[in-house]
Every structure is written in C-alpha cells, then in structure tokens.
Image (cartoon, rainbow, N blue to C red):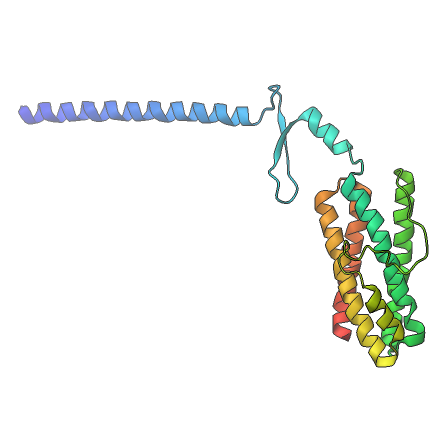
Length: 227
C-alpha cells in the first residue's frame, strides 16, 4: 500500500514538473516572438529595412521611407570628387609614360602594350572630365607630365627622377624600366579605385572604379608575365 502511494505521489510530481516546463517553454516562445517582431520594426513601429554597412561598418536598421531615400541619393561625396580629380592626374602620367614607348622600346610586345594602355585610359579621362562637368566639379586641364606634385598623395605615381630615367632609357633597358614603373602605377590605381568603392557614394564613380580595377588588374598580370 505504501509503495502504491509512493508511486502515485511520484507520478503527480512528475506531471506537475512537466506542466511547469511546458509553461516556461511557451512563455519563452512568446517572448522570442515578440522580440523578433520588434526587431523587424523601425522606431515608428513600421516594418524596417536592414541596410548593409560599408566594409568595417555595421548594418543599419532603416524605416521604409529612410531606405527609399537612401537608395535614391547617390550624390557625389568628397571621396568621389577626390578620386576623379586624382585619377585624371594619375591617368595623365600613364599617357606620358606610354607616349615614350614608340621611340624607345625594343620589344614589339611592350610597344603594343603601351598602345593598349593609352587606348584604354584616354576615354576614361574624358569620361571622368564629363562626370566633373555634369556634377559641378572643376575639370583639371593641362597637358603636363602627370607629375604636378601629387605623387606623395597618389599611390603608384612615378617621381620626377623616375620619369627622367625612363626618358633617358633605350632598348631593353627602357622595356624593363617601363614595365617596372607601369606595374607600380597600375597597382596604385587599383588601390585608389578600391578605396573609393568603400568610401564613395556615387553610382557612376563606382562603375568607373570597377572598370579601372578590372582593366588594370588584367594588365598587371600581363606585365608580370612580360617582366
């Protein structure tokens, strides 16, 4: 009889414990559901949009109105304008370097490479100048040697002394120095383009930067094979 009472008592305790556990689970589910629902809403209680941050930045929760406004606004920022201004100068120096190849290079392959680089970068300069005009920027004019004292600010720019050595070189010496300087020059351009993708805001600048990365990365690989 005692055993039977003990068994019944144990069963009752087990049932009570199970009921309590179930209640806790249900309460937790309700809390989680409420939290998830709240997490999907903005400050105004309306559905929110999660906007991914730029590299190194956390994602942001925006209202639908804020997300629409942010998506439509691609107005150029300081990074966009600085990139275009400096890349024009960067490209101009590349044209100076490629312009030396026809009369100094020994390798036909180096001469053809110089022609391709010039053919690609001249239209890019014009596109960037056109962008400056349409966005109210000041196109940088002039036909100098692409060495206007900005080499310390722009990655990959050849110094005045390096350009002088390139002008003085002939034959195989020119070929070797040209490839060395142009690889460095291209790597600098890729670095600048990568930076503006992270810091800029304008869609057109993003497109131009992606073109620079694709084209010049391909040319870097080719020049390394030729070196």
